[in-house]
Length: 280
Length: 352
Figure 1 (cartoon, each protein chain N blue to C red):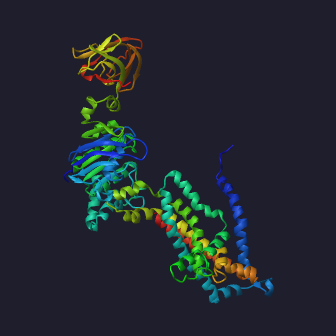
Figure 2: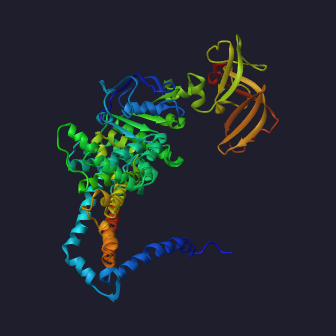
Figure 3: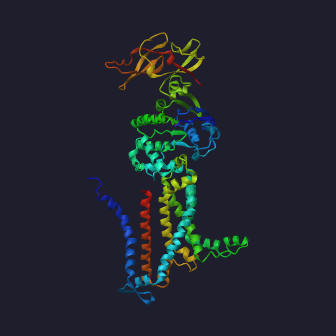
């Protein structure tokens, strides 16, 4: 008997590759092909191939707005999620072993509740007679509108994305150590400069990972903008749903899916490039 | 660089639960002195060092540097250079940036900083590796970068926390010499924490041997080794035979033999301690010698030493002789005379 051959690692990868091909790559290719098919009234799909769907997507400013709008929401939501999650993650990272696991569970537990339920929760909290509005009224001010607009969607998305962000940050804090911070302090760095020159740079891998996931999840978010947006906040994912289910224009839905995949691809490339730089 | 005097006055560190980790340390470290804090793990030596460096607050007591009370100052205002056991080099900066960090925090101009960094790296003979990342360096090189980084800021006090414990034996000997050389040349007051007694003896001007958060003995390496103040120090520093015996009015009785000590020992149960290499396998050479006879039970040849275990009146004596060409080890079961100087006989009352 010979030892494991050079083929063995590839064979071990085969099941994962197969599953990925069957449930991800093949359907995506199918969608790509579908985007070149002719859309007929009534929702049926013609057999002829045409460039008209893509032409519409490129020519109609509505779709450009859709992409820039989705990115325009995802970037501030990602940044806000990072700012909210970073201090928490750092606190958890520094807690004693016993507390750390407890705090992680506490932070991640919202993931056990479906995004639908959490979104409805936010509708109650942010609604016109909700908690926040009532609190603002107590001070004699007129509360701003916080549901069925972009602000409400952003607030809910930040909360929904925080557990993911915290987990990513914790995973990326591996290079932080108390000794490094002590060394910086002993060399004359006050706490704020220790943070800027040592803690922050060393945590960037986690920051990048968290931002990538938060960005992708925002662009592809569907339930929250659908419910909290009240039909006024239209993002890539909600538009794909509307085109596929409401308008029954599958070629447009397919083309938009390919388009969002391209946005994710671009984000992933940017992530890879930045990661190489911060880990160098 | 003129050294600065460091004084610790009744330094105490107490955590919420349990006994004091450091229980009243008073020390006066002379300018330019290399003082060792030596002891087993948990004796409070690192806690003491961390209090001096301001990494943890002191529960009570006072730390003064050059007459100035620094007890309440945070670490970044203490102006001390600390070399950590793990070296704690910043992994995201190259060697030069690591060394320059302290100068950057002090707002030193770029050109001056570059020159000082180069001088510090040359001091530790690493001038050619300035552009490397810490992870590309060997343990010994990382150690030297850590030393250069701590020295470049011209600290008032240099604190070394077990700096050699992560190095292999050969490199450790090299670094020992290098650290003492640099320390002497710069004349910087240094506190050195170690659990390795040989390291402490070889490097330090004075050693504070610590046990249970207190200083068991403070003295020169020679004092500590030749005149240990208690059984703990005699046992921890160097190797010793520990022989239980009974002190009486005429001396210490071990079976039929009477053992004399340099100063009279109060009657009661005692532990007699003798260094193995001070025991001769020969009759006494003069009146100021103790003598007995024993049966050889084991002989071990280790090249430069011949280790001989003897049964003397039921107690095991471990003797070590330097080897000579043509030396005949005594056969097992052989009866032989043993002798050692009275001045090499240590006796400590046994606590029941």
